[in-house]
Every structure is written in C-alpha cells, then in structure tokens.
Length: 197
Image 1 (cartoon, rainbow, N blue to C red):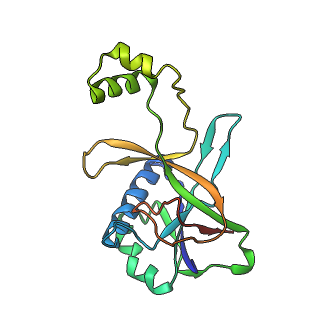
Image 2 (cartoon, rainbow, N blue to C red; image 1 turned 120 degrees about the vertical axis):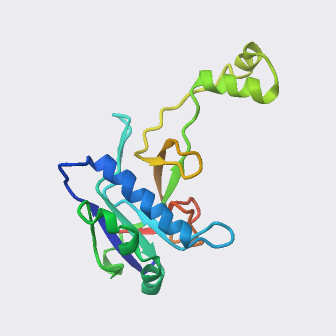
C-alpha cells in the first residue's frame, strides 16, 4: 500500500459526526463495490488513524478520519472518490492522493468486521428453529453460552439488500505487513494489512 487519500469528518451544525460517518461510509462502500473483482474483493484497504479501544470502560472510538489505501496512484484515481463524495463536500474534507510516508510508518494493522454474538434469548430461539427442537432443549444445549459485549466502534449503515440499518463494528489487530492485499467491499479484512503512521 503505497498511496492513500485521507478523509476527515468536519464539524457541522446540521449533522452529528455519527450521521456523517453513516453517509460517508455508505458512499465508500458503493465506490468499493464498483471496483470489486469476480471474487467480490477489492484492492483498497482502510485505516482509522484515531482508532482507540478502552477495555476497562468497554468502549471504542473510531475517530473522525479514515484513510483509503491502494498500491498505485492510478488505482486511487480510478476509484474517483470526488464523484462518490460530491454530496458530502460540506461535511467531509478530502486530501489529494499522497504517497505513504515510509519513514513514518510505525507498523501495520488489519481492520476487520466484527460480528456481535447474539444475546442468549435470541440464540436459544435461533437454535430451536434451526434444529427443530423446543426452546427448553435449545436452552439446555446452550447452558454454558457466554454473551460477550461488543466494544469495538461501529458505523450505523443502511443495508443495500434489506433496507434495514445495521451496525458495522470494526476491529483492529496488528499484523506483519500488507498480506494478500485483498479486502472486502467495506475495505476491511483479516487477511491484509495497511500501514499505520
């Protein structure tokens, strides 16, 4: 990942940062979908330079910036973010395409989608329906099930297929390098890394 564009959410009296994130990331997703290959993968990865997790307080912070990375300047030109973000010019600042400052890279991270676990009651109902058993049998089977809180930050997104909103939870973990360089259509994956600086 040699080039990037940085997007920054600006203060707005009309919209909260969370509302702007939703609109911004919806447009990014649509731009990425247009670039996907036959396997549904893209060559663009994202990072959130202000990303923080506080396990003690059980809270995550995404920040107000996102970087979109690609191997070449041409790839970022092809993405044509100016077109996709045209309606958000008063809410999002976009830099020009820049080379990654190799001397400032502190490491690499994988940003990936986190799927929250179902609450126990939903899980019991789901298992009962799926396996054709009573709620009592499903509850007995899930006796040791532990519901874990999802503390990773998220962006509220409208589903393009169902029309319902969902929370796109985003996790981060360190990695050795860029890996296979292939990402899903949210710019996220557990198999590729992006530079941190």
